[in-house]
Length: 513
Image 1 (cartoon, rainbow, N blue to C red):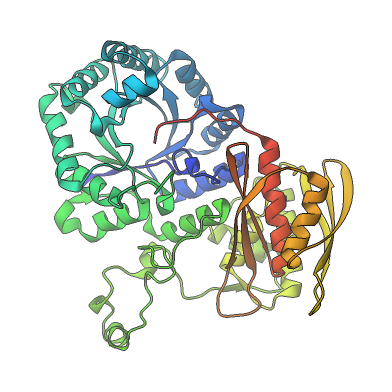
Image 2: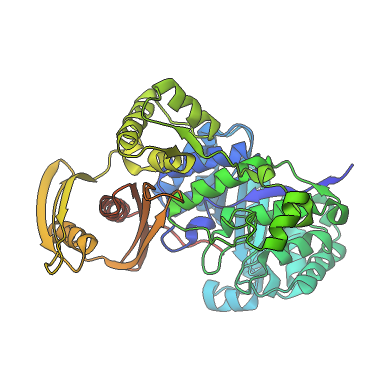
C-alpha cells in the first residue's frame, strides 16, 4: 500500500499574508468548510496570538470543523502557545504549530539572540506546547539557510520534547529542487530520533520553484507532509500551490508512489472561492485551475482531443471540478431549488436568515439577468452584505450620468454606521466620479493602489462584473470585492468593502513566511 502524503493547507494563515488578502471571520470559516470538503488533512486556521480578530477566526473554525485537523501558528513563547491552545480548545483534532528562526542571519539581525538562546527557547516552547496539545509541529524559520549542524541539534531536541511534525521552511524561496531534497534527506539521516516525527516541507515561490522544491523534498528527502495554499496564494510570489502538488502526485503515482486523501473534484470550487474572497484573480494559464488549463485552441490539438482525450490531456477536467454545464437557475426558480444549488456548490450559510438574504439578492439578479451561472451564485453569496456581521459602510443607492463631451457625474447614497449620507461628485469617468463622491464624505485618506475588473461569466454582455479595489493606508493593504451586472455599482460595492476592512483595523503580528 502506498504511503500517504499529508496535505497541510495554510491558505488562511500564510496565504492571508499576501498584501490585500486579509479575510473576515465569516470568509475564513466559509473557506475552511470548503477545505474540509476538499478533505485537506490539516487546516492552519490562523495565528491566534496576532490579533483578537485572528483568535476569533481560529476559534470559530475550531468550533465548526470536525474532520480536518485544525492548527494555529504560535511563536516559541508561552503567551502565543497558550493563546493558540485556547482558540483550538473545541476542535476534535487540533495542532499547535510553533516556530523560531534558526538561520544566522535571522538570529542576529531579527531576533538578536544567540544560537544557545534560540536552542533553549525552541526546546522549552515545544515542552510547554506538548502539555497543552498532543499534536505539535515545530518549524525552524529560514531553516533551509540555517547551519546544518546547529539545525540538527535544535531538531533533535524538539523531537525529544514531543514535537510530532518537523517542518523545514524555505522561507524566502531560495532553494532549488535537487539541493532542497538532499537537504531534507541529510537532516533525516543525521538526526538519531528523526523517525519519531513526520517530516514536512514548506516552500515559497520567489524563484518559481515552490512546487518543484516541495515534490523534491517528498521524493528525494522523504518528507510526508506538504504545506501549501489554494491557488499558490501567499506573500511575495506566493506559496506552494495545493492543486499542483496534489494533481502531480495523483497523476504521477507511478513515480511518487504516494496517495492523498484529497477529493479532487472540490479543487476548482475551492479555487473559485479563494479567488472571489481575496480578489486575487487566477491567471488563465494557471495549471489545473486556470480558465485555459483544459482549453485547446490549436486545430491539431482539437482534432486529437476529439479522437482521444488522452492525446493532449493528462488529467480529466471533471476530476478537478470543472463542469461543462454552467447554467443553474433562473428568475422562476424557488427558494428550495436555490438552497439545493448552494449545497451542490458546497456553500453553507449559518442561518435561514442568511439564506433568505442571499435568495432575495438572487431574485433581484435574476430579474436583471436572463441566465444565472454557478460563478454568479458564488459571487452573490460571497457578497459582504450577506454575512451575519453588519457592515459599517453600506451602499444604499447610486445614480450616474455620462454624456459625450460632458464630465461624468455621480450621486451616491450610503450608510456610515447608523447614519445615511448623500454625496455628489464629478470624475474622469463614471467609476471615478462614484469613488470620489464616497471619499468626499468618508475622507479615509487611503491610496487606491489597484482597480481591477473581471467578468464572472464569459460569453455574454449580461455577465456580472466583479471589481477588486485595493486600498493602502498607513502601511496596511486591504482588498474589497464587489459584484453586480452594473460595473459602476460593483465598483462602489468593492470600494465600500475595502473601507469596511480598513475600519476593522485588525493589527496583526507578523508571522513566518
